[in-house]
Amino acid sequence: MTASIPVEDRGELVVAARVVERIAAHAAGELTDVGGAAGRVLGIAVGGEDADRSVKVAAEVDGDTVRLAARLSITYPASVTRTTERARAHLRDRVTELTGLAVQRVDITVTALHAPAREPRRVL
Image (cartoon, rainbow, N blue to C red):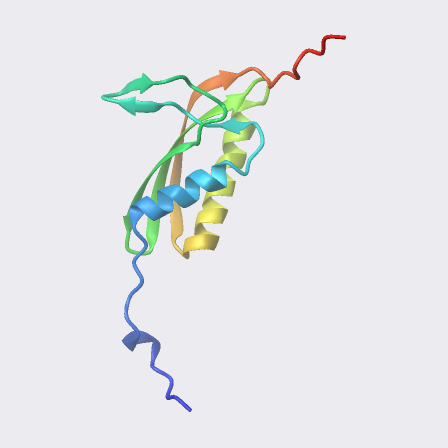
């Protein structure tokens, strides 16, 4: 039988910002009406704003709290306000659930509105 080590003597767990960014981007992909954003170099979009791209997330980890900044697109005609509120709540819940960090703030930038995916035309 092994002796239990007191919590304060077990060490520290640090979750890197890059890990939080990837978790948050994956969590955003779980939402309907939310798509990704083009990558940026010097503030200029590189490639197209494509709904199939992943959401871009930047995270600042400070101890046991995190601040997120997400860039995403929304499928038209979904409400931008309702969709971003839903995305903000989902990111906060999933990041906290998966990392144990308290999400202090989630800033969202909507980079594009996309037309709904069309079904391919059938030729008879």
